[in-house]
Image 1 (cartoon, helix red, strand yellow):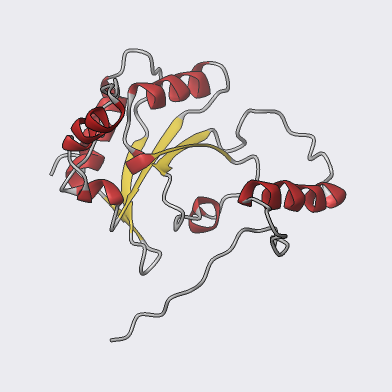
Image 2 (tube, helix red, strand yellow):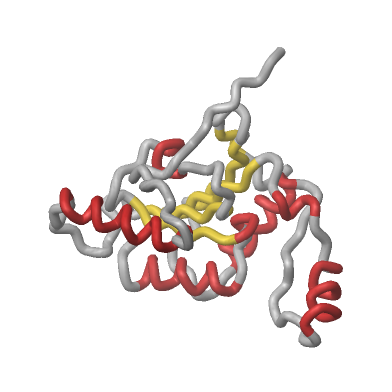
Length: 185
C-alpha cells in the first residue's frame, strides 16, 4: 500500500531567502510578521491543563496538533529521543513545584534517530574534538523499553511530587497515532 507523505512547514511562512541570508535571518523576519498580528493572551506560565509533555525533538512531531493542545495548555520539554535525563527531571521539578503541573505525558516515536546511534557516538566526538562529552547519548534499540525506562525515572525521582499520573506513548510518524506503552510489560 502506498504511503502518503505530507509536507510540513512552520506556522509562519518563511519569506524567500535573499542572497547571503541565513535560516535564522528568515526566522527573525517571520517573527516580525507574526508580531504584527500578535496580541498578549494574558496568560501566566502555569499550564491550564496542569500537564507536562516530554517528547523527542524530531521535527516530524507537531505535539500540539497531535494531542489537541492549544497555547497555554501544557509545558513542553523536548530533547533527542524524549528520554528522561537529569535536565528533564530539573524541568519537570520546576514545572510541578513552581508552576502547578500534576500529570506527565512521555512521547517517543517510531523511526527515532537514537535507534541508529550507540554510546560509541561519544567516542567519535572525543576523537574528533579532543574532549569526551559529559552527557550520555541515551541511545536505544527498543522504543517501548525506553519509554518504560523513562516512566521509571520519573516515578522514582525524589524531586517530583506528583508521579501518580505518568503515562508513556509511542507516536507513529506514518499514521499520526499514539500507542500507549504498558509500564509493566
